[in-house]
Image 1 (spheres, rainbow, N blue to C red):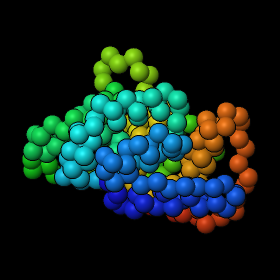
Image 2 (spheres, rainbow, N blue to C red):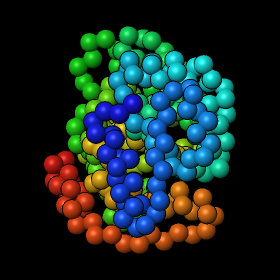
Image 3 (cartoon, rainbow, N blue to C red):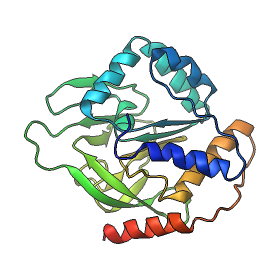
Length: 243
């Protein structure tokens, strides 16, 4: 589950930690045999993938789904940090219905549902995006690129208290005309923004790192400042592209 440069999010997190002298151990999960490694994680990333990729991942999870879901649910309740992009975001929901009408069950951890527009769809959520985030970040803008046919909505009547990652200034977001992008639940952050999202949003990357460290060490963590000149150039360039 890694398209549109999503691997760059792992690189960004790793480098921003290493530049501060924070040790990072990257542990990939390739199949059910690796599920035992999940328990020891502090910050989790699940990238995007096409419909066929999501079905393949579902088949891997299916063999040990109850255990996997119980483990992930427990980690979410412990406030471990998750960054979910596109397909990963969808898979954390109740289900995804693809363009052919196939219903792919999700993990059911987030009260969201995703439906593709159907066969012959001509309108996708695609292009550069700017959102104004609900998080306490400075600046409040987050930029990225979206390309998805699936339309994600929060489940009506849910008491989970999901909040959008932000309100759309430019682009689409969760749906073609819904006006909101992504979701936040505890320390779970879902988004459709590829590009990847973190290299040109260093404030968001540091938010995830700081949250993960706070949970791990149960104390407030202030990250050392970095020279983010290039990162902010990238952020500003993306703002101009999306205008």
